[in-house]
Image (cartoon, rainbow, N blue to C red):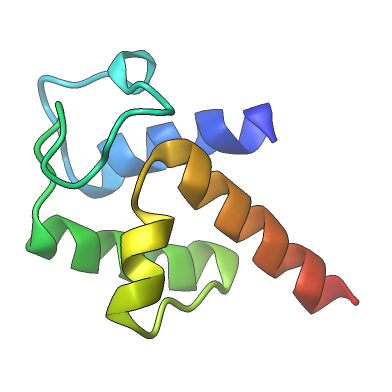
Length: 88
């Protein structure tokens, strides 16, 4: 799981072209939306597209999105859980 958290931090920085943010600067427990790195709804859309393309993970409701984008750790847990379902 820690490897997935590290991987997602890199993908967040790359996908959103965060010039002043390094993956190590992102606290895995900190709030993503409106938190220290200042993600907004447009950023979330870009991340949703990246998750679908890179991981085959769909986030198809606002309620799920709120939970998934609560933190990098929550995002990693969702991706990990969804992968487990797909492999069953």
